[in-house]
Amino acid sequence: MEHGWVRASEQPWVRRASDWVRQVQENYSPYLTDFLTPRERYLAESVARGEGVHAEAYGGYDGAERVRLLLLPEPWPTSSEQFEIQALEVSGVEGTFAHGDVLGSLLGLGLKRDALGDIVPVTPTKAYVFIKRQLARYLKDAWSRVGRVPILLREVDEVPELPPPPYEAKDIFVMSPRMDAIVAQACRMSRKEAQALVASGRVELNHAEARADAEVRPGDVLSVRGFGRVRVMETVGQSKGGRWIVRVGVLRSRP
Image 1 (cartoon, rainbow, N blue to C red):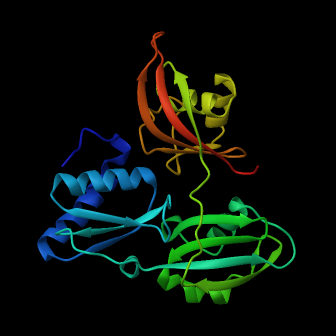
Image 2: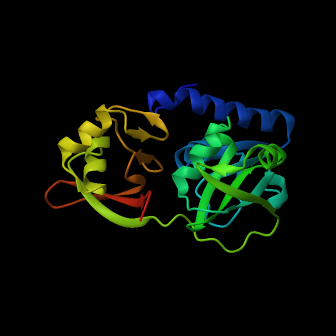
């Protein structure tokens, strides 16, 4: 079934989510997804809601951006254990690291992005990483460095209170919700500079390359290499001058 409310490029993913929902309905049993981006979560929850399937989300701590969905035939009580998420405390022995350093190190070990939840730096030498529980043993054996920084790794059962990703909320004004227009306004650069970044492959829409004229929608995340991330939260309305008012969250990769 084709869904007119999603992009053509997202139709295969939505069909995948529809298969999960169908499996829940036919087997009358829960289904646990991989870690999802905000946009993937939005799409999957929309599919589930349309079919009368209940969805619970959890990413290992309150306010997590990347979450796993537990799809249920009925709104049953759930616990954090059912999401099969393990928190790891990563401490640098000598040297500092940032979010991108930790992510690059994990991907370099062969892990797929959907096996990883949030990476939450709390100091320049410490971060918490949320992963699928079954990967914990492998990482304890294989992961010893973030870049050139030796690390100590510890499984954490009780995660301290962590702040959600520190997105700076702001309203931007654009003539159209094109990707290059959003990047230009959110990152405070010219439209020409934004188009050049997109053309060079340094901007991703939901972790995939896209054209400069791609329409951006609520739940989308733009990754701008060398700058950080822009999360599109909602379209507020139109200004008197006819520009679209879009509410975004901006998260710089480095202070």
